[in-house]
Length: 272
Ligand code: MG
Image (cartoon, rainbow, N blue to C red; front, side):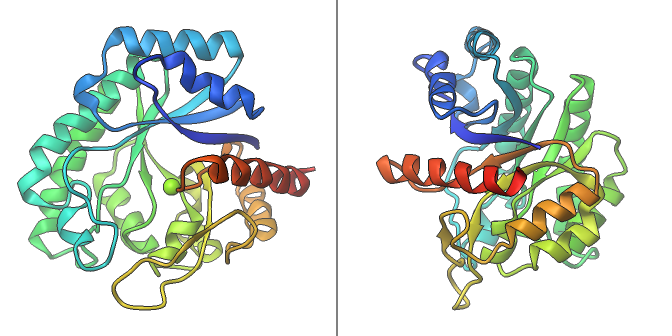
């Protein structure tokens, strides 16, 4: 398993995106981009060239969408991902554009949160969401790309059922163990028993369970939260996982860099 970091696309100069990854000594990265309307083939090519020059593998484009998204239990279900009907068409178009960007950049696929997938398969929202996901996955497939579900807002069994119901060959999971804790959805180790065979990417992120019914649990620096990384890495190895461990730290500034460096050293000690 190679290490990596999640880094936001620097649109002014894509080479700066890669420089940040190189400075921290990672061989891989996931590149996140939010404003897909701004991405162009030229931007993608510049990113590709910078990555090639540095010998850094971009393992996925983490495609975000526009508009209000509230990362909590009260407003999250009506604002995040492709679940809300009012923004679904616009966001679906943005994710398709993200797939095109990945294709231009020579990256094998995109990842995203799709929202609070209904737990009840009979909920009409579930059927509508499946139709949108099928359209997105087929668009990715036509470009020769995969679509990976970022874990978080749904239970492992609901994510597994969604993948089964879509029944398409180019679907996978970008497994974020901290999200499963922070959303109170599952013990991340047990989640691998449910959907481990679909894991294609991993976010190395740490956190805690929620302590009230409204707010997510807190995110923590690697090794300081409740994710059991030694056991998790062992289980990923047992599953034959050979992808990247991509460090995600959802703060900014100097502390983010310090935490990423410490997290890298921590994971290196576990992998050696
Ligand atoms: Mg994540």
